[in-house]
Image (cartoon, rainbow, N blue to C red):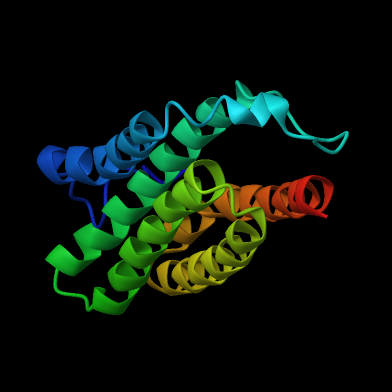
Length: 166
């Protein structure tokens, strides 16, 4: 099996830590800024398939780690001379949309708008996946759980919107 931490035989610890911790720290900061609003999830009318609130920070921590390793692999290709600017652009844009969703859903309680934003996020992640996969198959594969989770989150968001704003 391919070593996920080596790209073209190289491993750079500082770059790895920056790329891995960037989404984690961003996610933690967004969670902290919305800490007083996330309790409302308990009060929402939810579909039968909605997981308990404790599941979300665990899943997101795993997804942010996978995103970080994936971004590290692409970034390292860029350091070796490959043009990865478009791939990294979409990665950072999707990360902003990822964080933005939390504010739309929890702080503003705009479940319909959050659902639309999540659809845009999915498209951005799909573009990122394609661009990453074309550069480095493993980097793309590491984003598949994220894409799958976004499908689930989109369906959940849609039903929460229907059940709470209809």
